[in-house]
Length: 410
Length: 230
Image 1 (cartoon, rainbow over the protein chains, first blue to last red):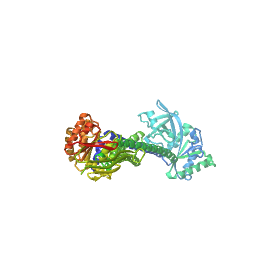
Image 2 (cartoon, rainbow over the protein chains, first blue to last red; image 1 turned 135 degrees about the vertical axis):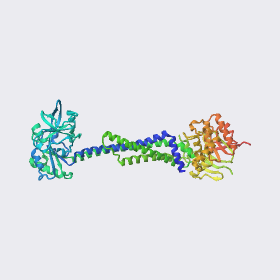
Image 3 (tube, each protein chain N blue to C red; image 1 turned 120 degrees about the vertical axis):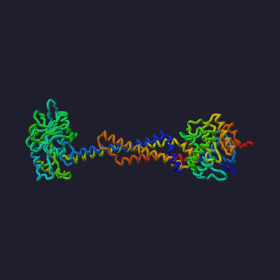
């Protein structure tokens, strides 16, 4: 009997292709949507975190100007005020291994906006003054040429590393290495081109900037004796709190500060930024989870509706089958098999479509496609329960009617 | 041995509530094998209820029902289903064929639930039965492609497929034109001539005229039970 019932179930599904397709569609969409949403949420989250982590989480940034107690408030320097508190003496003290044993490199930075020109091409570009350690501290690779050396930094050399966008704008397909460009009217020799990196910390477009030795930028281009940023690389990520203490002590001593609330510098570390981003992306995940949850419910209700309608519509058929000798068990088995078949096939198609969708969105969003197992389990589980439950529930109800009541059902 | 024997059979709808309806009042009736019986009466007389109760589609509220001398008032749902499958065949006014299903598949449906034959045997028996109702050439047609009379003949073939003791027909010509009606009643007559017991409900005198015995109901009671002299 079992075999005949299974055959009957398949036959019934095949004979009513539209009904079968529509019912399956409910399951397919329910499962596909949930998988795509959860996967997109995860992808976006890991994209954001990876980008931040890629900068390096063993870095400390010292910015001039205090920011009070708040961890994330903007320091005075960020609001346009010129703060001249970070000077060469601070850098020397921080580089002193006796005072700051956990600090590996200190890389001071100054910034300015200048006209950069080559031949008759010119443009406004951000010029960053960095020292020889910058490439290592900030993980900047070169696609051509070499980084400048310590002696070039010490000797105020007029050499420049071009961001990839600047290189393209000024030189096109020409080889820029060894060419002379003008910054603020002064001649600089191009010695390298940086790899394309996209947006850096604080939204600086690293590709459209020109990097020159920090000494040259400070004394020759800007004519100042302070720094706009100190980048500190700590030997080990775990030593960040220690290094941070050392920086605070040295700078307070150097600047004669006794009241911690009156610090004229602000220390940022990427760990805090990552933590902050973590809270943002967790909120994002929660939000996407809520959307996924709603789509689960909507998908589930969709499946419920189409199952309820299509099975209830068949009450007369159930009545006829009973009238010619089907037992309640036969009816239930048939509808159970129909619901199982619909759920399994719909589920498989839904998972496949979910995968394809997730990969498609990952391609558009430019993150690595991940479909977490729990998304599949959740989607298939909930849709399966709704599909089976509401496929059998009305059939069970109808199978309990006596045949004549079921046959009279309108 | 009578085929059907009813003793003080009652059927009450909404029993015990304010709007209870007594559909059948103390029916006493005996039907012998081989009879050709028409049950008549105005609508609401209880004729369909009587047919459903003796056809195991509905249950009596009280009284005795003996089918082949066996008390069947206390049967379980599954036992009733077995009797419906093996011992009786039902023909409905609205045919009740499965949609999008071929005539042959409709005919063999009761055999699937009986589960006594292989697929090949069922096909052979089904085709044979279609031949008996003159529909061999329509075996592969879907029910929607058949005329009303043809659909009813498929339904009769379906009712006959498990070789039942008795065929019940509820207004079998109610949805048919007069030509098809005659065809169907001729087919019934032919089946009865072969010895099959036939019990049908109708409200048309000319259809009832095919039967050898006419039972008239009114307000749930038998008011006349007339046998034609053979």
